[in-house]
Image 1: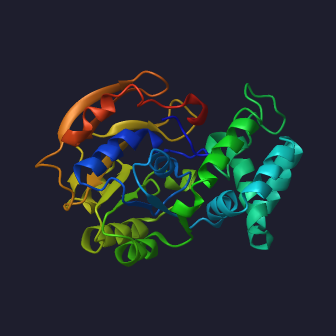
Image 2 (image 1 turned 90 degrees about the vertical axis):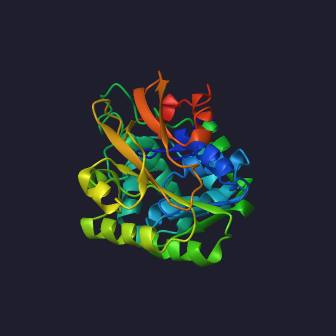
Image 3 (image 1 turned 30 degrees about the horizontal axis):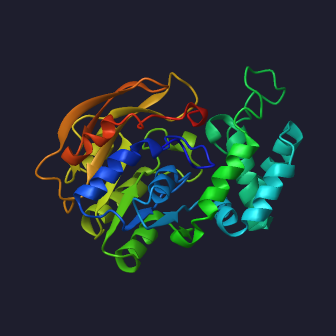
Length: 320
């Protein structure tokens, strides 16, 4: 499936849909609940829901801007769509929406949600604090509306809103959300954590983590989280040390986390011990010719064939 989220996000994980589906099938979790403490654009979660691989999704994001967008998309759908349709995609509008973000505590959820959406689609790499595509003077090769196909984006929002009864939105600290997962969601659930990058997090995310935050999170995941889980991170020694008790993929893979082709980050995955993987992870290779070039992943045995699927490919529109 191609990207289905209306939001562009650094390091979006929707390409893992087939892989995660295979994990769910192998562990008899298909049709259960799925949770993300760091939802962001929620592209993977939405892909799984729209394919009916999971029955309900729980999306959490501490960032009030992101939370407001999802609240608006699900519960003020018509109003949000009217704003998207009627608002001109110009530098003047961009300046107005920047002011909304600077004064977010005085904005309504709809105002903040629309501002988040507008800046996400018009800023470099979708980063709310980044500059506008094409520059303020619009002298770049790409212009402000390069990623703002209104018709396509409205259709994405409508498709997601149809599933609103199966989507639960939270605005909590990640560990507090995991405590909710421990007690409030069914046993037949899967939790996927994609925390802010250890190295590049401050550049890419509004709510980046410091070293203590990463430690606190890993300690809860390893010692207290009682649902099957998977964690993805940038592949650095500090993270490998934090998750040394968990099983890791044998080899990281390349994933672009900005519009710059020169900046690609290696990622690594860790899996909970209560996942039935039939002994060990095995290594295989795959190639994605469009946009990503070569990369290598480690897969669960049941996932190998699924990840060779021709449908496992990125949508170039949302990589930058």
